[in-house]
Length: 553
Image (cartoon, rainbow, N blue to C red; front, side, top):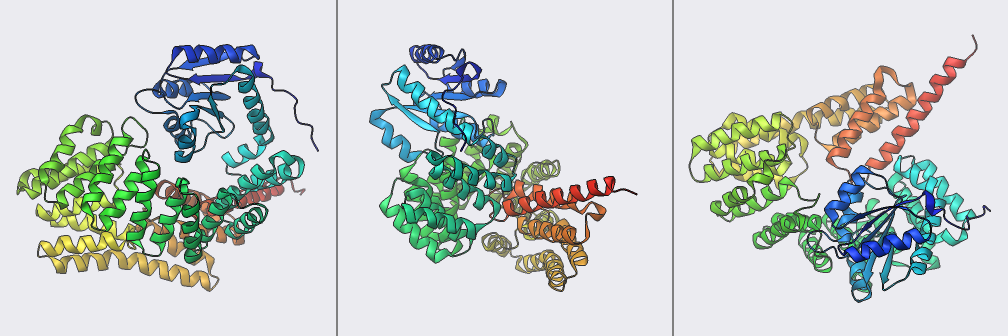
């Protein structure tokens, strides 16, 4: 068993202290200096902290929860992790008053390494930092392997910690569960979480088991578990998100909306959860609650990395459905400066304005706006399927039938399994008296992708991996923004490389397909397993090439 270091060499560490009170920043700096840490930077706001982290790496970040105006410490942590500005090796210590400690912990979307409760002294600070840094050292190799997506090494590293560091036994089991889920080994994760629950049914293990069940599509079992979790631990906000996922998978959309509403009541600061609540409310035709949720997503997302141009499109879409074109136009007018800062924002502004003009029978202006929007889209502005359907609607109302058909065909190819979107397309054309056109467009646009996918799957079943993969490659070119088609194609290619070797740079094709899928659906449950499969095969191919090079002639 390895000997743990008895002390931390603070002379080699660099820290950032974030607090809106100058006296507290100075006190922290003095305390850190007293045990050898001389490289200490200070920041008064979350924005200043982000700038500091951009320009330098820190071993330790000590941050007060309350930072005055703007973002709080929890929001800063979430932004730094979301933007990958800090990794798992960086210590993040949250400082909070005892009076709000329980509320802060309960509402945390992403947990810091530890909390430091006021009041405290230098000895308490050092003891807390010693414990965290020594634990980070024990997990260093595991964290690095995980960050590099070398999940096999991360998994093996967890087993080493379990055997050699008894004090970190539970932490290693918890991280191992995350690794197994990331690998796509859902049955292995299920077994691990059941092992932990047999020892002690801590909330994270029960939540992990429910997630493993959900990823195995055992939705009724997962739902029953999660309903019990939210009953016993109503403060555990992540359980509401997962329960909503499980309910959506069973087409229980009203229940999912109610679940997310409860989650928002527990943690009211997350713009992403409010956005998702708005999407569900809109799908359920609950326009009043959709409006409230989308507006809250914008309000909570301002001055953060989580505000998206599409948030403004979502809110405008609700107003248009409420026959309030004036309110939709006002969203663009009052946020024009912000929207002009990105191609996606410019696209949203152009589309919404064109929709407003079309509703007001200003067809010339609507056509001009749609031509601008289509140029922005062609130049690379990311266009969500819902926004593309808004473009279809504006084109139909403005008499741009050819452009509408082209846009709808693209949406149908890439979101052919979205009943809500396709039903909306049918309503748009029916209201315009063009029901026959929409049926023809949808049939023609989806038929080729479906046919290629079926033919590819049949060839794969017969063991003809090469021709099956080629068929799916053709399908992926037709549906280049459909994550499921992209991942199915990547899987077929990887199976082919396993069998025949990497001819015609097939591994490169698989990598590009998975990169595209990761961009479109980063949380998809199949993605991590396919990425692991890709890395494993890449390593095997590289080893074969090396062996061929050194083989004696």
